[in-house]
Image (cartoon, rainbow, N blue to C red; front, side, top):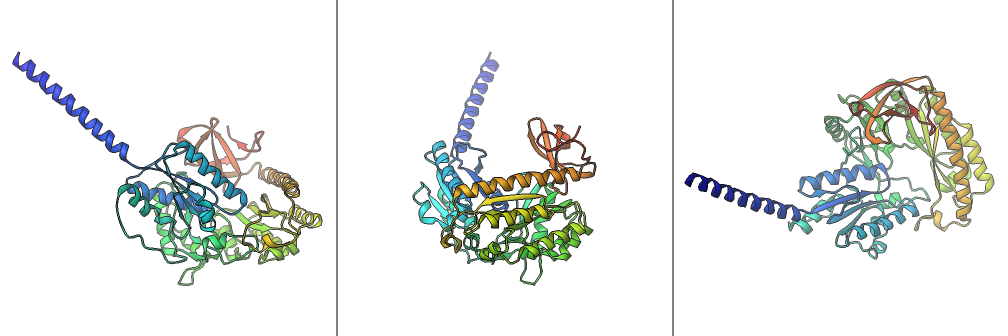
Length: 454
């Protein structure tokens, strides 16, 4: 009988201690600060956001995804167009509705350019591009009561960044800032002068990425072709080192100016299968008068020659081009000139943007601003041309066999991936093929013009 009572007493003590520790842990967890990072804009922003998230997790912050309630929201902002800024303001409003008590911190280009405007939008802190990595230290002070001196970083300092989110590919930052002061652009003001990482550090980051079983790296920056180190090394020399990284299967160049895409870079891509035959080359206009007003560093004849150089070395390379329509004083004849030029050269995809009037730029003060209605009509016409050229490129590759890197994300019962030359392929869902490189013969297009495998 005494043994039974002793056991019952011990059991009650155990239950009491269990509940005590359960509620203690719950209190601790409830007090753990949560952060959610929202990223707008370019691939460079995504690489930087991923690095900030990694550092916050190391400091003990709970990382929230999607639109979960969080103690603090960090918005890595973009200001390349008026619509980019509008998206940021809308996002602030939405996040405040989710959690009115949350702190909102804006980092990035919009914060760098529109500090006073943002202060009127329920924002608690604003950090520009130069100081965005210090957001981790500021949050340590705010939430973890960890007083520390936060030193102001030198102007135009460089910090490394890379993403691990997608698990099959990573955005790797190699360069920041821009010395090309195009008349329509504010990015050089928000990001500062061009500066680069060291080749040694980029290679070390690539090895860390590969160690996470990621097979493709997308080289990211504001003007990556302008990569140059203090030792005088250039982008071509960086590529020479990256192709030697063991386990790195694919290197994709995010965007490169036509005057910086040299013949030696093209030849290296032709010689080494790791450098993917996919080039995103900004054009902006096919009319030489408009190109001059934009202060671009080439005329359309140079651009056309560059495309021919790529196609001569890599006949099945995918070439995408950026185009701005409705730049000040662009007439119907100017636009038609651009249209006919694009139609005549072997560019396979177009990224089309209506000109956006950015404050404190030369173009914003030019006479001959184009109405939004006219810009919309021109965008629509170029989208149709882009669709036609993309379909022709897909059909041109029909019957060919390519290695496809299958991504993790499942959509409507399918997994998706891209060939080296950026042709989209979908696979009926099988979990074991995610993050695998599979040989695929392109044979059947679905109703959305995506190749489908059986």
